[in-house]
Image (tube, rainbow, N blue to C red; front, side, top):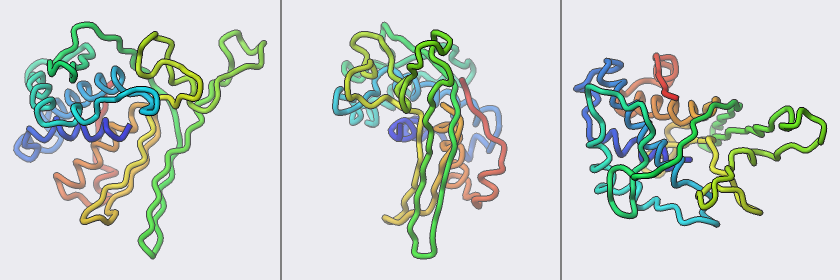
Amino acid sequence: QGPFLCQALRLIEGFDLNELGYLTSDYVHVIVEAIKLAMADRDYYYGDPDFVDVPLEILLSDGYNDMRRDLIDMHVPSMIARPGDPYNMKPIKEISVFRPGLGGTTTCVVADKWGNVVSATPSANVPKFPRDGGKSGVTFSNRLRMLNTTPGHPNCIEPGKRPRSTLTPTIVLKDGKPVIAISVAGGDLQDQVALNLIINSVDFSMRPDDAVTAPRFATT
């Protein structure tokens, strides 16, 4: 899930957030539209790299993100998911499947006086009841329900395969040392809140307490 944040940041790089003004309508619009584009790619291409070839190098490349960034219309929000086509370097893939969803989690961030930092996002995400109403006693294991059954999809269920997850414990480094640690709960809110906090801290030089308590936004 970390590459989603990287791709969203790559898309946002093409805009001067300070010039747009913190929390102005244009500022929120740019970030939300970048989130939509990055999440559409995430849901279409991400899967266990031991099973599928995720084209991360292209998804994070200058050429691809310059092309995708042009899809952001400053006057009209996109109301559909639009994954790109990194293999053919096209801004929008002609045929795609996208199913957004919400969820829940807990978080843990710890730092000690020696400079060790841990960011963890524990989340079993096990449904309380199987789909037959609880009669079978069979339920999905930890995060297994985040796989799908679409044939040929990178995140399609297979034996031994790890699901594409929403979990995004994040550590930001400066000169090789940790300066920010973030862990967020709440399904796809995790990446979006982390993105808000990183921008608050890096682009607007906010103190941690201000970055955390500032108003933030997300899209489903």
